[in-house]
Length: 116
Image (cartoon, rainbow, N blue to C red; front, side, top):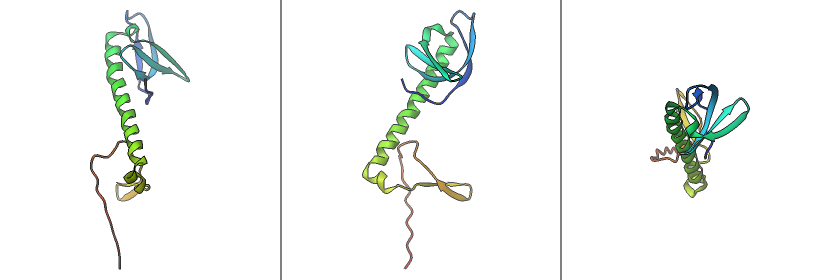
């Protein structure tokens, strides 16, 4: 399982008798990991309500995809072309700011300027 950003919510047990607050850390087909404060707990997905199971699977897939995109971006930056792009910037309003890749790029826009 991959860890991701927290997804705060109120969780409900499968029989509806108990609830608790927590942040989704990860989810796979059989288990879910939730952060409560500074502690993490992992338990069987079947212990949650059907609604929570569905939500956890959907959000867990998003977390997994985001982690995979970060890995692809890191692999790209380790390649020859990525190493040539050590200082990336993006336009933020009217100014350029430093930028770190979160996804492997699909398209490129290169700007070159020279003076004589």
